[in-house]
Length: 423
Image 1 (cartoon, rainbow, N blue to C red):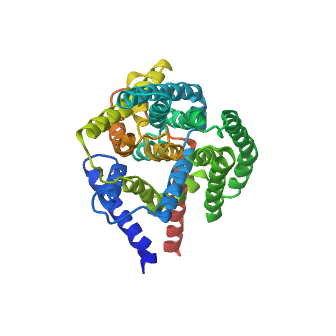
Image 2 (spheres, rainbow, N blue to C red; image 1 turned 180 degrees about the horizontal axis):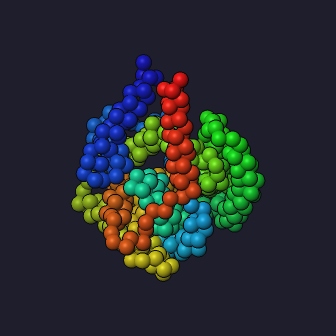
Image 3 (cartoon, helix red, strand yellow; image 1 turned 90 degrees about the horizontal axis):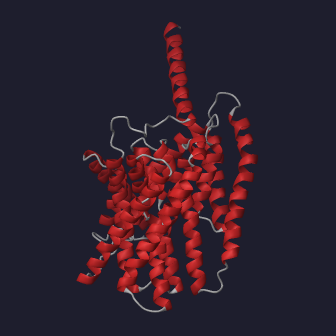
């Protein structure tokens, strides 16, 4: 009977994430906050009813892929192109500032020679990470994904992942001679060349295929989702780039085509019905009840402050340099605060290489969880409506196409009903 335990775990996760999501919405907070809290309450940190398992981890991984694929589908490519250079500057400064601040704080608690230098630098590398999936879900929920700030957050977070891989490789290479920085850099460049080639080949095929007739068929969603999974697999397996980057690129390739609105709608159904709640809850399930002492409490609080403000300051400064307004700079910085699963992956790599000092392990894990919960709250307040707001959400071709199709469908149904009544 134990083999069927996963059914109970998933049911508990779905019910609790929805219930707590509704509660957080009542207090005008994004529902994703409730989903994250559900994982903490159900997991080892509180009730202990649900524990991590291979199945839940796999569903969660698919969940973040779906979120990024959906984000790609809803991204205005022209706006993303316009903000590409700015996103690089934002990401670069948003990596340098947390790296230096994290290293500085860790050095106070862990002074010493070469090994301690690497351990402290690794804490800085962890703080460079950004989990864009949390920000994407929040921005979609509050209707601010297709804004200048929303696009800047998306672009900077993708570039941040690449810069984070480079930083991780450099530090790993200093501790593990088997890691070759040149090979990693070649693979990263090769992935983006591969992505451009795929886009040039696949996008015209989608345009031609989606333009056939007015019918919307299930095969559009199935083939498109399979394409996203293949791109995610190729990115991770062959190029060492995060799978979420491959999924995002797949969404960009399909976005703006005739049936992309229909695909996005079906993908959203798949997401909220199962895999997104499991993904968000899985982050909370990683939290365990630690044995705190005063030193650990102070270190955790300081590390949390550094984690939050280093991204707001670093990315906000980069945004300001690139010409964004003050409020846009705060919004962009806030959207980059969440560390999520990306920081956890980097942490596990550090443990494997012996670069993760045991004193930092619990504080880092708590920082990952807290920043993941704090980010939606920060975005909610940062994107509060204001007079002459520079971030008015512009409806992308995807949204406009979907709304136009819905109007046509409603009109068709009305005509059919009138014909039935007349006959």
